[in-house]
Image 1 (cartoon, rainbow, N blue to C red):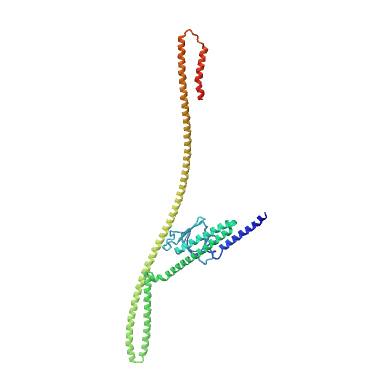
Image 2: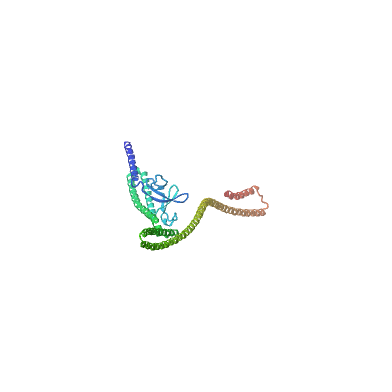
Length: 426
């Protein structure tokens, strides 16, 4: 009794120490937030894809997601366990070609399905591998807690090994996710910087670029004209000093005026061209607006068609549920019918056995009756023979006296012989 009382607190203390070691192992700096990164999550109601920052906690099997990385408020939580279904989806639920092989699926014990999408197929596989490692950690932790009383140290070593493996898996996966984030960032920056030059330029961009070049040319011409005006002014000042300078200045002014006239004509021509280009730009802008309006209407029609398709899909789902319920009812009816058939077969077999028994009894009774009839026939023949002999005896001895007592005795003997088979039969 003393040994038992002394070892029980020690075992409880060892169990508590082992549990604390497991909690410290799971809540260590490398394993607290095993993996985090951006993911696209499909909403459950509107089926829209929203960008979320997801943080994985292996100690509880929780995936918390926020709107942004530095957002303090948690938007929602995805809870899974060791029995949850986590796999890369062969179907692109997002629909965009760039997300082929990037979607993965989580089926939780709460009967909820979550559809997530990573930046690259490698990042999706990294998330799935880390979630599988987290499931192993949760399973090892559960087994360790359930069996600490007998082999706590062994289970603790198993948990430590699984956590170390999960940490290494998460480290490799975090590299893959960081590479995917860098690729996504480079793609986003490349689209912002190379779109005007590398991609095909639309008519509006070409017109804007042409107008910008023409405006630069007009500004250059204006600067040239201003420079020429200053030159003419200087020449006019010099013409006031001498006539020769004035004549030269006049000829130069005439020449400059001719150039200026030509420049003004060129400016007028450029203004007309600019107005024409402006009209064309306005016309093309109007056409672009009409195209945008048409595309907007098509988009609204597509949205309506999508909503109608979703409603039809919901209707078919309800019909499928009804069909499944009807199928269950039919299966129950079939089971009941099979049970009735089995009962009927059992009753038929019992009746067949009973009929066979009755037939055997009737056959036996028939045989006994035939035997009884044969005995009766033999007795009748004997009686007939005895009667014939008596008649002959009476005919021969007319004077002989017949004792009635003797005749009664013979009749009684015959009756006893006849009744004896009846007693045997019954």
